[in-house]
Length: 160
Figure 1 (cartoon, rainbow, N blue to C red):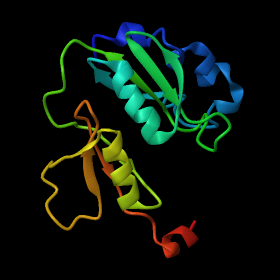
Figure 2 (figure 1 turned 180 degrees about the horizontal axis):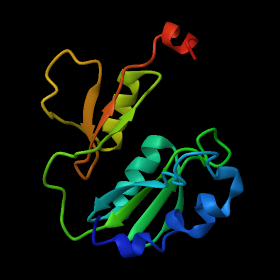
Figure 3 (figure 1 turned 120 degrees about the horizontal axis):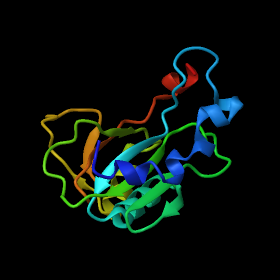
């Protein structure tokens, strides 16, 4: 947990209206009564890093102030209300070590998406992955590593 926990507790991403208990359609039939609400990124400049991810993912900004920004999937998309929100929280310190958790993104065209993300400000990152991997490791403008995986093959897509 970060020092920003108190602000996250009051943000729209963690509001009671979003909780499973207040929405019976989202209450699990069995198992823990928990719902993954958001992925949080600490940043010295939440608006700047949110802008990168908003452009990278095509998501919408649903909350924005100096200390936190919330991104959600496009309204009405298959991901809306299903995928966790992304919350960017202001912290005083910059990132200093490799992430312990990262995002893996699955494109339709890996080379095109890597080039597009680099155009938005991502840079290639070496986290010890070695040569010959099927994924590309990038870092966002704050240095948060993420992977762009290879596209699924037609056979893999047919399995769904």
